[in-house]
Length: 445
Image (tube, rainbow, N blue to C red; front, side):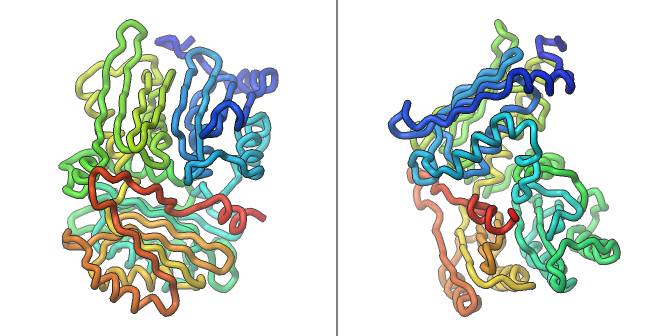
């Protein structure tokens, strides 16, 4: 046993344990009248909870309740899930994927680990090259980055952009315009890297502020974005007005208490429920080197309450006020990174090189700043979703939106969704980028 009662995991023993005691997965549509139960019993191992939650999040499933227990050598959990419309999961493809990804095949084959559409960092990944960018955010930055990519004749097949507390993190899939293949020319990649670094640099800052990377290994996109912003310490410093407004809108309350008798720290989060809330919290706790031993998740629409019993990987609980405050601030940042109260613009049109550059240029010229974005392509169609706000901090003028419609409306369909008008109105559950169908159509052979 490791210090604090944590089990030691030998890799060879873990593989043997999984072969002897393969994970048992059940997708149950009979026990509950209004949701599907996903039950997983497995040999315990580091990071297993995040793996399970990540798979459910990738399928855009809503977790309404969950019960987690992984104290000791066995991991047992039950998730109550629905689709985005609140219905049971009845699609055979989705059920089959859950059973394979969480079951024995998910641990013994590379099928799940090579599903590329939620992963980044492979220098050449079939027809795509993935890059990541991180730096200080400012109005028009995404437009400038997109222009560099377009000028070098790279096509953006998919991208995910998050901003929080003056920082921006971005993951982009691109390929060569002429060959439709991943870019493996080191000279062209080096040119793009240097040009983007010049854009990301801010006067008085050094290269530590701006990063680009073409080879990070296989990493889940959303988790990587969390890691990038966490590394930039976006949870520190003065909370900006937008973030404070979002926290107030969510009625976000986070506390860390001590369970002296069992040697745990108890993290409690209560806020308005939204998609992928549990994933964002578990992802952050994992990257902060905490282990979740027990957890209870419940949703009483529109609110969610999540309680986690944790210890550090060395077996110790959270013992100081400074550490407690850091846990609270990091979880708050993880929740707010995915939240935007700006207008949501959905733009659909035929994909072409430079399309992202053109759209973001129009947004910039109309005084709109992008706080979050998801870009993907389905067949020949580009689907771009932008969360925008007025660059000067004022509410977005609908006349601006009408100008935007006129400028891009001839080549793209534009749909505008307004933010909730009252703090009493629950936040809409919007999917911002990759759906299962688009992944299968675009990325899988």
